[in-house]
Length: 197
Image (tube, rainbow, N blue to C red):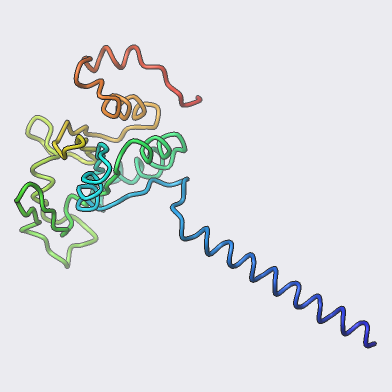
């Protein structure tokens, strides 16, 4: 009987110790960025990070009501190759085109002057940042992915929902500075995908 109690106590301590070790391991893992997801930052964080370690900035300009935005988020921005490439080569930003964030850009304060908090989960006013950086040929559409260089200058906005295989060459075109010397159609025609079909 006494031996059984000793084994029972040892088993409880051992199990408790294992639970503690597993809890500690999972807590430590939870504090690190998940490599399986894009490590989104705010616009201001991206600008600040660029001062210390310059990288291009990729801004997903979306709205809460936009179906193609949700699809691009779930399919393209969760594709393992895209996640890895974006995290390595860009400071990625998710920017609500109709939200109420304040963005300071080159001495200007960009806000949403017509933001209505009662409409936060539906269509709302358009943010000044969206008006400045999302238009293509004078038109704003969602999603728009705006690419900025290491000095925070806008390179180009790209509009529309794009699947991973179509987004891969766009990411590389800007990240590798090909946009400075190669026309997009030539780059796209010669591009070799690393995404397995």
